Length: 219
Image (cartoon, rainbow, N blue to C red):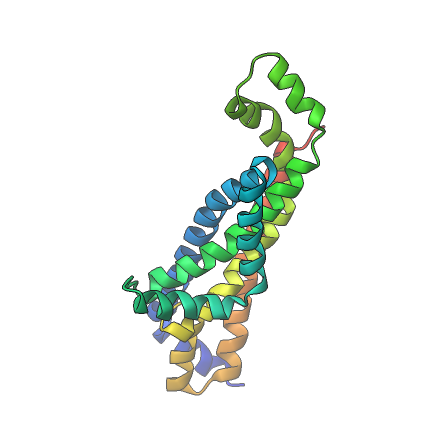
């Protein structure tokens, strides 16, 4: 391993790698936020919906969780264009990861809400709280403490899954690195480097999640 050569090539490729890192962060943040927003509604429908609604949402969750992310990405990019919905590779990738994230978040939310004793919902109704107020002031604060650790794990999975978007041409961090490798032939050095960058990203997410968890924990 020629370390000085690697540092020189790394400096030369810094703008391309930073652009790839920026796309990785943007894809991950957008997918996690949109997936969480959609997943909360999926979890609510699974918990409080009528029987047909719960059946439909269960099919949605099981189908997405049982389908490899790789296949979801290809389906969103190629199948949607066949039916007339033309998305860019970036948009199709975000859509695929959002759907995947929502299925996991929906199941997490369902499990957390089911763990809260039904008596608390009945008590909230007895003092005149609407469903929205009951969810916001009674159920959500308690559910968050159970949701957060698993949600953080899902967020790190989305960061790792973003590497699969290179198959449809999204130049995220991994593809940007591979482009540099094809020019420099320093495969070992750059793969070790990009692995370290992904580790840092996920480490920061986990630390942020633990900080929030400590903040909302009951003393």
